[in-house]
Every structure is written in structure tokens, then in C-alpha cells.
Amino acid sequence: MLWRRRPAPQASPPLPGAYRLPPRNPHFTGRDGHLDGIRAGLTAGRPVTIAALSGLGGVGKTELAAEYAYRFGDDYDIVWWVDAERPTLVPDQLGQLAEALGLASPDDLRQRHRWLLVFDNAERVADITDNLPGGTGHVLVTSRTVGWGALGGVVDIDVLPRPDSVALLCRRVPGLALETAAGIAESLGDLPLALDVAGAFLGRTGLPPEDYLKTLRESAEAPLSRGRVAGHQHTVATVLAISSTTIADEHPAAAALLRLCAFLGPEPIPLDLFTRDPSALPAFLAQADLAEAVGVLAAYSLVSYRPEGLVVHRLVQAATRHDLDPVTRTATAEAAVDLLRTDLPAPGSGSPHDWPRWRQLLPHVLAAVTHVQTGPGLVQLLSRAGVYLRLHGPRGAALPLLRRALFVDEARYGPDHVEAARRRQELAVVLYEVDEPAAARDLLERSLAIHRAALGDDHPVVASTLNMLGLTLTALSETPPKGVR
Image 1 (spheres, helix red, strand yellow):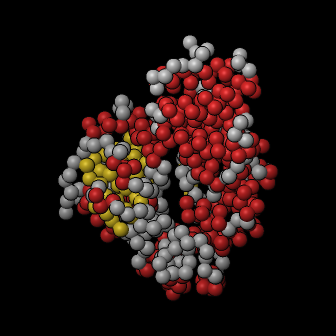
Image 2: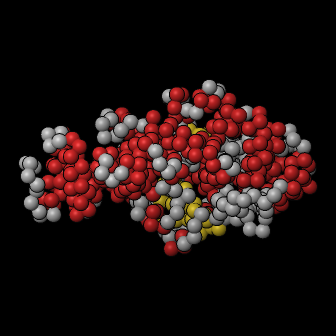
Image 3: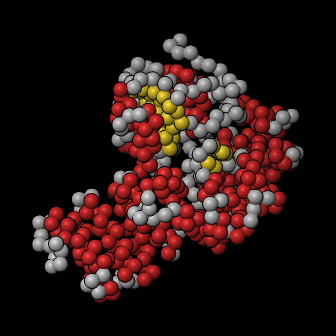
């Protein structure tokens, strides 16, 4: 054999000094053939070898990638995990790797050897190719989309074979009868995420497995289609509904925490988001024991915990949101936005010590704002995130946020209000910086007229707008307006 494949150990092997990985799944079961296939593809001898794990949500792609990294970790000097669902955040994560290695930029990774980069939950091939450093190393990609063959080998990940599904359930629920385990596995379509939640529920509650199986078989078809297994009735929404009923009755604070997390991102959520300013939390949750609530959710496998924070699978989030009535859904989404807005300072006026917090919470900002339609809290968060991306991220990524902030303020106040003018000016600055001066000029001229009418010619905001307009007109080779030096 060209490599040495290690069996799954009881304890994780020592890992290289420059590494970042999610915790190892102690219940990982099966997939030896997939692990062999991944290793064969990555050791084929090409300078940079890429393997892509493709399959539907909840099928275990992330767990398989993590298991590969742990099982073969001591064959690498560098192992680095990148959450790739939002391409805007990928360069920053690679920048953290370069910083950990003392390199000037991620491109310098080409000078190193024996490294593994894992891009988890990537959507597009271009999002990966634009960020590959080159050099001698391995790249592992997980994705729910297709089309990865152009980069390298593709390993299609399906649901677990029935014997592995049964083995997984029996590991989670000691004493579980094989026939009952097989029935549960069949009802859940052998989807690993659903099996894991079901096993945790049984282990936590002590409910007779036969009764649980009966409930599954009697349950109406879950309306949430994401994560559905072809030919099978249930999704993770079905098993979550059973767990949620128990949690809501016995641990309402845990249920409230899960609802709030459902409107944040699937990336790690720092726990101090819920403790730094309890007044920003919904009243019921502000009085709860956070550690106890997290423990309950973890015991039911609805969340996992990493050193960086709390992690909720995107399918669990989707199913949780789906089951909420419209009033609760709106209130919880707005609470998530307000929680982030209260925590995050305005990046333009904040000091550099605020920037790591923005880096930590930006994925959750980008997720939360998609669930809220209007409101001053939404506009403030969109505006602050846009300014942060202008200063620290790809400037183009700020444009959709600032455009939406302008749209919401125009709808709320009218197009000629000073708040709408302020949003236009923020948007114009970014348009100017991404070489779209004509679009910036149109926004600044309208903003200037509104500010002059409302504030007078001597106001600092008017002076700022005039100077920005002057720079824009200069870029267009046009004459700056009177008053610009």
C-alpha cells in the first residue's frame, strides 16, 4: 500500500502545531471505504491534490472530512479547517493560517510541504480555486453541490449502509435491539444527522425505543424538504420535532436558546454573545442558566461545542425555523439582529481591538440579516457590517449590504430623508473605491442636496459629502463643485 491507514483510535492522535479542526466525533461509524478512497486520491503524486466530498445536507460530509484529518493527522505538518459556506470569509481564515505560521500571506504556503487544507461546505468551484495557495499539499472540499470534477477526484457520499446505521444507533443506545434499530434506521432513511439526533434523544430520555419507532412510523410526512432522503418519508425535521416537544416541556430555556441560534450562522457562536449584555436577550432567556441550557441541547445532539463556541447544524437551524409560527419567527429573528447590533460597535469609529470581535461575529451577522425585513436595528447592523467589510474584507462584498440598508431606509423614511442620504453616502464611498465613480457621483449629488437642505451649508456632514464628491468628479475628470478644496 502507498500509505499507512490507521484504525480509528479511542483517543485523538497528536496533531501538528499549526492546526485548526472541529472536535472529533466519538460516535463516528463506518466509512472505511470512503476514507481509503480519499487517501488514495490525495496521495496520487500531483503537486496539489484535491478531493471533493459531495452529498446532501446531513449525510456526514463534514464528519468524514474531520475524521480523515484526525486519522491521518500526523502525516501532515499543517492541518487547517476553513468554513467555506460564505466566500467573503475565506481569505480572512487563510490569513489567520499565514499569521499562525509567521508567513507574510497565504500564498507563501507554497513554500511549505505536508499541509492539508479542508474547505467545508463550499458552494462554487471558483470560491476554492481563487484561494488555493499552490505548492505541495492536499486540499479536501465538502459540498452539497456538484461540478467538482474539474478540480480533482470526487467522492460521492450517500446515506449510511443499513448495517452501519444500526451500529451507530446501538453505540448511542446500549442494549438497543437490532430489529428496533433497523426499523428506526429505515424510518430515517439512514441519514446520519437524523440517526445521531434520534440516538441522543433515546439515550437522554430513556423512552422505550419501540415507542419511539412507533412515533416515527405514525408521524406525518415532514414538510421541510431540505435534507430529505430520496424514497424515505422523514428528514431531520421529523426527529427534531420529537426532541423539541420534550425540550420545550422540560427545558423551555434550552428551547428558546435553540430558536435564537437558528437565526445565526452554522459557524461557531461564541457563548459570550449571550452573556456580555443580558439585557439584549429576550426576557425569558436573560434569566436562564445558560450553561444548563447548552448542556440540555448538547445532550440531545442538537448542538455541539467547540472551543470557539456553540455549533448548530444548518439542517437543525432550518427545521427549527420552519416549525415556528410567524409571530415567534419574526420576534426571534429580530432578537438575533438586536443581540448582534448591541454587541458589535461601529467599526469606522471603533479601535482596532474591536476588529477581532467583528471577525468572530460577521458570519452570524450575514446570516441574521437574511431573516429580518425591516427596522432600524437591521439598518444599523447592515451599515456597520458594510463598513467593516469595506475596511477589512473584499470591498465588493459590502455593496449588497449597503444597498439593502439604503432600500430599507428609503422605504421607512422616504427617499429624501437625511437617513436615506446617509446610507447613500456610505454606499457611494464603496462604489468609488471599487472603481465605479459614475454610480458614486449620482448618489453623492442627491445626498448633498438633501444634507444641504436639512443641515445647512456649514454642517460637517455637508463638508464631508462635498469632499467625497470632489474626489469622485476628479476620478471622472469632471470639475469639482464649488467649495471643494
